Image 1 (cartoon, rainbow, N blue to C red):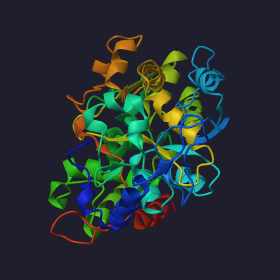
Image 2: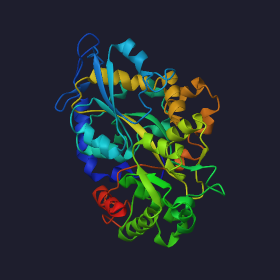
Image 3: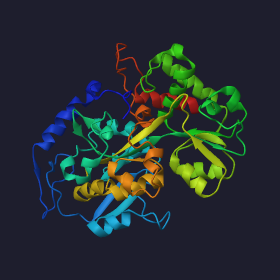
Image 4: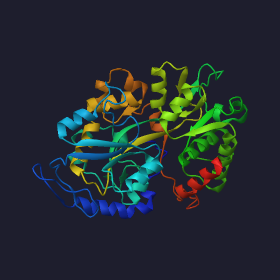
Length: 404
């Protein structure tokens, strides 16, 4: 969690949720032999993990719940099903907005939420607080991932950390020359981006406004942007203007990771923001791509959290899943498959690439602690400007303007 992120104490609209969390933890029901406490609205929180309900419905990012269907050698779902009797059904969420919408249907037990979804889910009462005592592997989660603004309220965890990583700049090594070294200028500078007009890509979500704001932090210091998620009118307008200029060079925006992979593979796209998952997939297919962390401006990133629905029909299976996904061996598999830093500190001993945790800065000593992790923009600027910053609803409107 970056020190630059929103302080949870100023997220005033979460105070009530914090009180609810406290009340939920005062009592519980269930034991190892019965059904255990429910996760539904109005139910008491679990005090013991009870009998598995036989099914688990998840909303997840691609690559987070692999069952061997993508690659027969990549499967941590089937062992979980055999061990617990919980049949796992996964709905892929391509954006945080989509995940929030899906969770609000009440059809899913849990979600792998990023920071730009977690606060909305907590504030909306869509997820329950988590009793970390019922997740044995939580003890070994990196301390830098615990009790953060995007996964807790007043010291009460609302989820189990999954892993974290940076949004990267990917480019076609045969086409983009000279190769980008340390900057996002190939996608944001009008002169450089213009050379690849129609073949650039960008993430199709309002949260991408933060990427533009981050670029402006370095290149237009007079705007005095200190946090790309805390933008007043002038700063927000500048970010929107930059994105409108970029729009002229963007061939397509992506939210479906498979479409970005295909677009890079067939040469329709030659540069743009990506997750490590797409990059690693393309490299495995021997496509001419490379991906970098642009150190000059830095990067946004994600720190994902498994959260349990307040309407969970299978809370005992969900608690078992949250412990399973951060089991050291499983968490190591997930981290290498997706291309991210694991959440469990002991996972580093089980990665096939023994340098994985060092390369992905799992302990946060190189750059992960300096990322601007996705978080929900609020009207409260977090400083003496007061409530003049643009909230997420205004970011949604701004993104609509960008795309026309």
